[in-house]
Length: 189
Picture (cartoon, rainbow, N blue to C red):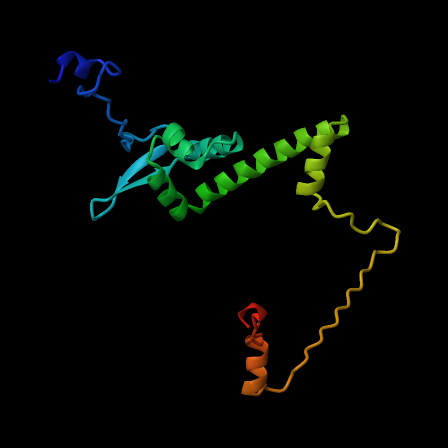
């Protein structure tokens, strides 16, 4: 017998009762309804397709959001209020939009570099190591020190290959089949 109370309260089921477990939440792709009119104008093509064009304020908004480290899909949804797919299409058509993203990323990179450089100069060893590896190309190998002769390593390997003549069937049997020893039992006499 199934108890109706067990169905409505998860975790109260016993041997023959079944508890209802809520289904996993569905992810629904939301499409923005209207682009941000401050940054975008809508144009209809001859075939009825909708194309978004950026206003000068839109380019600046993209550059600023990119410089602040926003992800491309976040720029599309939160700043421009368009779908990420539409933003990809826009950047393919509009070189200046693509350039605004790149300039914003470069500004962010420069700002992070300046912060790390200041920390390195203030004695933060981790910042100094990170900058040395990422910007100066240093690695864990101690390379040549300026003014000192470079280390040289000579590696010589000798490889010897000995080719033998083919074996006769008797030689092969002698190697693969050990000789059989017959042990006689003296007690049988």
